[in-house]
Length: 243
Image (cartoon, rainbow, N blue to C red; front, side):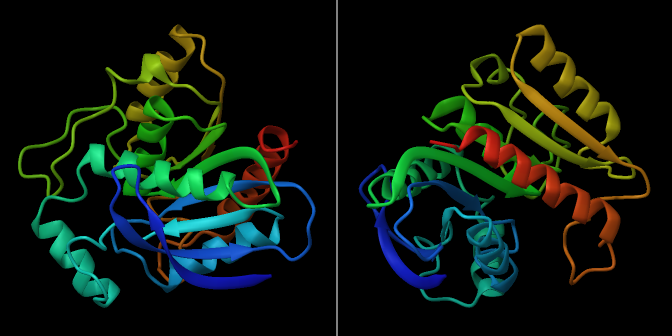
């Protein structure tokens, strides 16, 4: 594969930094926008992008903190974003839509694009799928897709309960049964809403796994859950990103 750091246009016209990982070869293929987690545009996010590229998809990671902290170290940029209450939903949708447009403009693109995110990025992946033109979305334990955001929560967000009826793409959800954000009850609520509105979704829940079970550099890492989750992601992308 090849990797590079580039500048892309957000849908609102702003130029932002992004990390691009591409499989080698001219074969037609889908693309994936990876929405980085709250800790930012960091090494872990870029490693995930390369892993998705190994599955055969052009993958881009927009730097969601570029406006507030251009060129800053990931920890510093994340601290700045957190102090501002996180990335506003409208800005997030614009940046991810810009990433999707970039992928569709590549010579090898088959025109299909998915989103994927972990933690805050999981919620944002669902948000984009409710408001933008994508072909599939993956939510890895996104907090407050449903439920009530508690007073004092560091991010200025709302749940997406009122937006879920507008979900435009199939959704894959991967959740830990020991997680609090989202809790199993919040995942149940999400499933009930999707079922009531006849949305296409696929959920997998893992016993013994809490939040961030994909993060292989944290004590929360659960190898069996993470490995199964990667298999589910690969199968989901094969189904929904094929030409």
